[in-house]
Image (cartoon, rainbow, N blue to C red; front, side, top):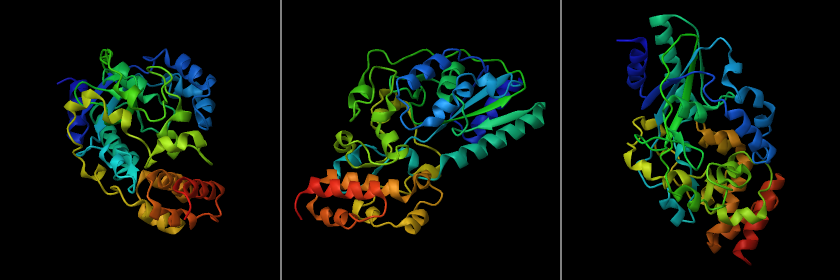
Length: 341
């Protein structure tokens, strides 16, 4: 068995749904696309995208000695319909990827085990990356043949849909590259049409400033008022464009139970009551923890304002004097939406 076949077989043993190879310089158009994205201001408050553009634009700059990139996909496909909770406005809708343990930890451990195996088998040097480094994972995933970037800009596969985490192993070893995948979106517009905030100015382009995932996770301070109603009860991320992709009919539920259901869809009133210590304790080990209590409760209050549940007005009123400006502003907005107490 060749080294490439052996490492791909090993990747499947580790739990990855797919593994493919490309060269670090296989995405020559990324720089221009990223530059246009930033120049249009679509990155919003994510200043790091502009500051680290020279690395993200050309993966070969990140580690010049690398000769191959092993791209890996890990499924986190849900066992339930993630859009069903949107019909329960008194409950919190949390993105599927944040329902369980932090994927950074789980995927990185798998990558490190695979990388150690590769070194033991063939020598060379390796570096592993999961999301936090300036690596254009989706573009490299497409170049390696894992899938293609759909009209919602996320990676889509004919074999496992679009519910996947991506990881990469850069190595000095020479591994035969795979052919890139072609686009199979066709005339489908499901992901574009379902977006609550019209965050796609055109197919294959995302204005993050209007994306609910960005607004609930990355955006600091009050969310623009014209976007709050469209957020519904989504308090952390948004799965709408992913959930409607027809290629998900081939997705099998995530095999790692750590990705499933620990967070669920709790009552908004329960979440609004969290102070900093309670928030940290409740979401220890979860990706939700990184946004902090204030941003989280701000999101919960927008959901309360959108709920139409009069009984939740008193919950919002209890946070009118919150020390955090964005929380207090969100509480006042929620009270106004729910009318006189």
